[in-house]
Figure 1 (cartoon, one colour):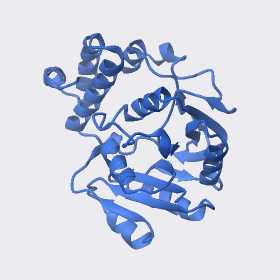
Figure 2 (cartoon, helix red, strand yellow):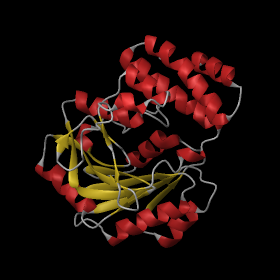
Figure 3 (tube, helix red, strand yellow):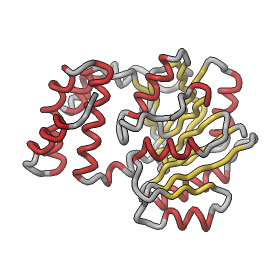
Length: 285
């Protein structure tokens, strides 16, 4: 098996349907399999997949395993030399999958290849970033994005092939030999799992490349937009874990008060103290 396409979905039935239809319309010429991991959706996603796409391997989780856990479950059942991770809110174009496969075939030193992401109206999504610092995180979660132009690669027009630190993981193809026994560290259940993945792949000596002549449609964060306060709390714990892992414990003391305020604003609640308590009780080491 040359390629395994893994899609983890949570309550995105119509988007998932469009994604699978695009794969069916524009399949690669190589041998491939498509695996859908349904993360205990409350909608009819699983029924739709079973009925309309019987060729797809459908894995139904009894509980939501998170984005990281869902993809790892799919990876555990996959057989491909290459792994294409697709968000359920994406659609591929003609030659998208074929071109990414060919790129890895012709670049044996590349562990991950990413593509150009566009909104449905054709506008570009900036999908490439440098690895973030604690200062980048502080600016980001204070909504001071003008301070993060270097981190966000605002100087890159996404019009040329480039080696990068981290692409948006909503459409990336990974060489199996660049991975450990998992795709994602499940401690990062929702956020920063993709950044940690790129850190691990880079530290093993593989390149990560962006290819501009390959593209996919991406709506963006359709599952996380549904996040209730308890899920948002886990998201913030993931943020703190990433920065503590790569920058040490001091980062936690810088970022915790920022995230507390952000949580209070996002939930329109004065329960920020409970977030602070939960964050500082969490096992982040």
